[in-house]
Image (cartoon, rainbow, N blue to C red; front, top):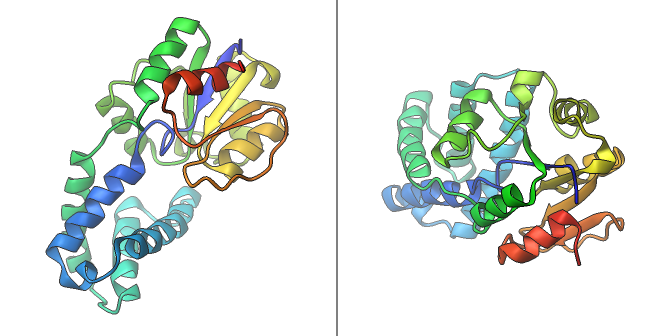
Length: 237
């Protein structure tokens, strides 16, 4: 039984992909230039752009409003329809409304968390993003009071995969790496970085990449059924 479990937030507990899909489908329905693009192509392109701009946001070299404009303009330029800032700002409003309306937990997460609360380990969050972005996600999901600590990169001045942010979380939990499990969807940011500190890990491998890992890593393609996810987190067979 681990003393504590640390969770990533986006696409581990909060279903960012589902919300982003709602936003992109809104654009496809409203805008012919994107409606003509196969959805898988649109999703991959936007995800790559978002990841690139998000790194700038985490580094503090760009502000949130500018990041949203930059990634919106980059997407439309990629598909041959460049737009100026005012149009990008207006288009993002529609995307964000659809994104927010679709906010939900990753399937299986709610039941898994309830089972872990009954099992007894401490629960914490460690996530890369802005405080103003991540706290509302926890609130809308009804999770704001479930986790202590909630370690957010902007608030700490350091981002995953830097080991310092994991050390901050462990210090606040009062546990050692050997006593703590890390659950996340990013192989590099969540899993490999935690393993280097000596933590056991559960990789939520949504894309079924099946990368070989060390014995202390368990791999799931989903949190469903939650009983299997619980067994993986608790280290049971």
